[in-house]
Image 1: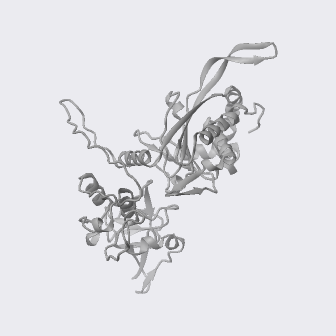
Image 2: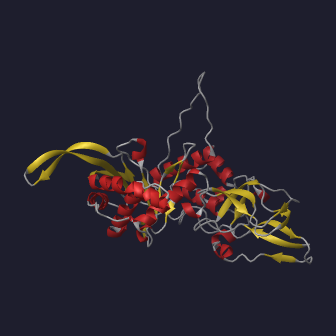
Image 3: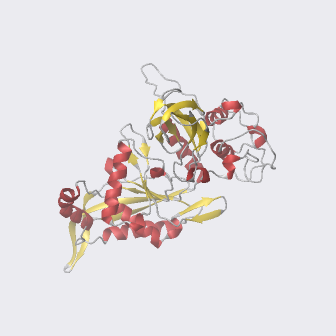
Length: 427
């Protein structure tokens, strides 16, 4: 029986590893090519991984709870009826996507310039190194953490438990980046009749990311009121014909995405990320849209190159991603490489909000609910009171790199595009 190594396939740009949640097959089970045989979790999404070959699942190389590296073997598949020689599936692009950092032992996991480079035989995953770097844990301290992974490897759970236990040592002022020491959390006791609900994995992840963003970015929020009467009248006019022709609904979201994409082209310094003391100006305009899931959690699929799509293309992409989100079919690539985020809080009846930036982006826009409002309008015979459709835009941005002028001008430009919407536009 020939044997084939199955590797963890590429799961989207910037994703280098995944945690094995569950093997759907056990050793000795027959499997078919493209049949889902395990579930994995990245820092962005849970997903099933299909078999690269059909045959017998001869050996599982990465156990449940352990971390698998993209492009590295996770299982051995036996091929019936073939010569008994070992065959390795070409890794191709998956292997090429693994950075050198992920393939060699860590030399310096502390903050930049804080710990001299030293050699260690202990392997640390990119995820563990990233957590250590953010928390200011130097290599010498990381070496002392007891690992529960294979061959004593430190897992994500190990380092997070270490941090939460309060065992993390202060950096003694050696860190090059100032940090704010969090106040000790008050002990919370459940009273009689209270229901204690453990956070699921996604809620824990959301909580950690929101706290990280508040610590990393200097949040400022600007607000603009927008008259979207023309936009509302146009959608009311075309939505029925659109649904009959395309078989799907026309929402306001693709129109908002289009306006944001146009404004990002006008103000490209909002479409950036911060890396230490460097600003990375993004070439692509990839707009994430926050989607509420049935379980109450939130996920943000990304519309890639939104500025290159027509309004029809945006409408179809919005509907497709929203449906995939609600049916848990999003891939890791669907959630990767966003450069700006839209949150439609108006769908919950909210008029204003102060959204938290999705790192490593530097800005996010919340869209409020559209309401009918009496307004002063200019007419040929003078000012008059009229009923108009209005809403608020709430633009949160990172004041480290986006000052008040740029942040204010950007959200005003989005408002201008929405107010000037062509009521005669053909979709």
